[in-house]
Image 1 (cartoon, rainbow, N blue to C red):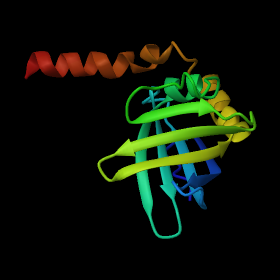
Image 2: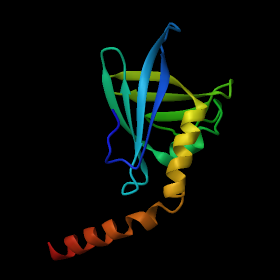
Image 3: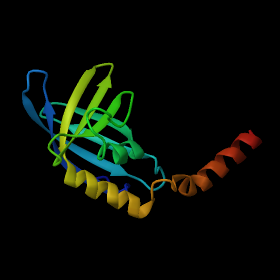
Length: 142
């Protein structure tokens, strides 16, 4: 169910690809707030599990155009376009293990376009100026 406190929400039907090539359906709810324009919240829900990740929006933007030999990201999250351009792959690594997810590219592009219509990539700091000023003021008066 979509959280109304987010400015853009897209639910994407993904596939979790197992090491033995098994495929398990997973739903991913991608959420974006203009008040936190650098971040995309991704809630992955499977048959018996749910996991929440915070992803860099710019990483996703770069990833839908990246290739397997040069994925976007170098840490716990990597994103690249599959050989089949209709799919984008997302690799997640954490303390509990790793996961490879295949997502249809079109809903990812639609989600990212909606976020960029609200806050173009490169203009995130303009949206954060008020929060940064308040933080500095609070630090100076503490």
